[in-house]
Length: 353
Length: 277
Image (cartoon, rainbow over the protein chains, first blue to last red):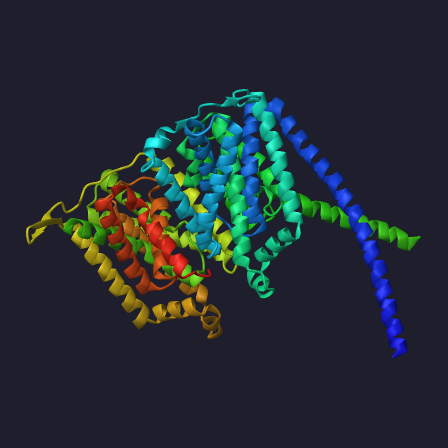
């Protein structure tokens, strides 16, 4: 008995020390992560700033907005593993809400952005409550159906206020210090917004909640067995993704000073899926990289080559058959193999000495 | 009102022809085939081309359309979908969507983007109790019902059909009996593509033929398949006529709503009875 208790005490002591170590390790880890995050944000900002002289600020602003949208899609598809073909609905809702609220409700663009995000999240709550109950292709296509419903609502029954095919021009773009008529202000505003969204998603996906999302992607049934209400988590994620997409939509509207029904176009969903896949889904950097690449392709390719939809299709097939991880996944694999080879060679040296 | 019901029956018939293949492929192979309505578009376009450029009668144009679309369906199955059995649904979805993009772009390349209207090949109208119906639409409805009974016969009486239904239920079990399931999947797929093309051929004189005609009907098909139950062929039959009637009757009282009422019905069905797929 006594022996056993001593043993137990030893174990406890050991555990204590281990816990202590782990706590301190965690602290330094968190600090390192903080530093790393700042570094990451700086890096992203530098990449976008480097692009400016080549493409012009207005185009890079476009790119950054699309990247925000791709990030929101990546949360849904890459992290939770739910492919939606109707994510553009929230972009459109955000954009139209900003347009309409600046016309009828307020003169403050920032308030309009908030309203746009709220409207998109409300739409996400309503649609998500239905679509989250199914998964796989049914999820993708029912979202597509809702996107189509939204497009139809804008084009036909709400034509009087949304302008139908003609779109909606936005009034009151400037307010106090906030002047969305100035391209430089737009660029900086969007860049800061992108960094904010990136940071938010970084924290979110690194949290236990993010781990839960990835486990839902791997095996939802097991997560349910562990006692989690997966519908609720899926719904919340859907709403978060919809809100961020609505934010991107609000920025799109303010960037162009004009909302057209193409923001809701069902076919454009392929673009964001493509962006996530080409960059590497399930990785925030992949979404960023894919967003930039997709925008480069669609902005520059049609100048030289008319059949770019064809190219897009072929590239998608190639990704599905050969490069599942996308470009970022390929880079990660490359780095891993290099590290492995380096480790192997250094350990061999150790042995030989 | 009678006319609305008649139109609803026509739409339901077309929806049935297109979505039954969708239901078959989804049920058997667990593949959402975005390219399914590509064969529908190809069928309609080949009909237009053979009527206008070659100048052969409607019937033969339809045969050419269905035949070539079945061939295209076979190629899609052979070169794209066969590599993706057992993979995550997302990848098949994206791959078939890529095929859809490529196909639509090729169609735009060959025939241009402008809609091509073609006229009713029969052009006569029959009169019942003082109501005038175009004979063509009655023919479409009769054809759909014939296809339904033909499929029922094919599935319940022939060996191939029985194997397909068994594989729908339990793929592994059928494979354990020493039957090469893939071959029968190919048959089901080509059959579905041919039926979709038939739907396209029949629908072409009622609506206009344009490159993106497939993407809209695909959504309706999907609503039909989800409402009727995945891989449930009788359910698909009932659901397509039900949704066709719903669309047409809503269109009579609230024209703007006819486009979305099918999706509302689908959402209600999903809410009441969630599907794991």
